[in-house]
Amino acid sequence: QSVLTQTPSVSGAPGQRVTISCIGSSSNIGAGYDVHWYQHLPGTAPKLLIYGNNNRPSGVPDRFSGSKSGTSASLAITGLQAEDEADYYCQSYDNSLSGSVVFGGGTKLTV
Amino acid sequence: QITLKESGPTLVKHTQTLTLTCSFSAFSLYTSGEAVGWIRQPPGKALEWLGLIYWNDEKRYSPSLKNRLTITRDTSKNEVVLTMTNMDPVDTATYYCAHSRPRYHDFDYWGQGTLVTVSS
View 1 (cartoon, rainbow over the protein chains, first blue to last red):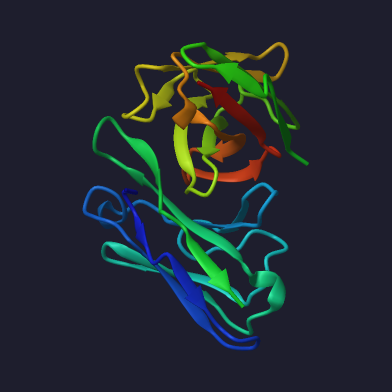
View 2: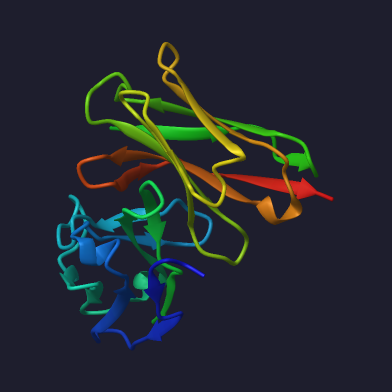
């Protein structure tokens, strides 16, 4: 199982708002490390969607937003569109076992 | 624009060693603050981080795979090489290399990925 826990699936109708959660622990998110989010469409490379908890790279619509509190983080998507249907992964850094990058198990968003 | 591309065998046999090359452009691994990571995704499963190599040649590996992994760089060619020993069918996956920003420990640019199948 993944170090970061994500709900396996969420769904929403076009135009709606959904949130995807990412639960960590005191050695990763709770230790103050940044959380990042990736959108992964089948057959393509993952795309950085949110970095540093709540920052959007250039070109990412402001419909996507991130937040972090304590040992967890969330990705919110407003105004759902059909093209948002994808897998979403959270990622952080963990200071146990000599330090390592950790990913969540992924959340499948169905629109 | 940073680009990365993975290359290597698409099929390896059980117990063999896998060697993948990541060729990149528009940044240098000699520049402070740069890093390249390897991530894989088995079919139908989640992304899994394998390792990182930093501009100062420091390396970090996944604790569960560290005994099987080696990441090296050839800065004259702008390449990073991943070596994984003792391959098993469970290692069948799409392998990605990605540019990492140590300031954030994120991956902002990814290669297209290469599917490696391990036969039993």
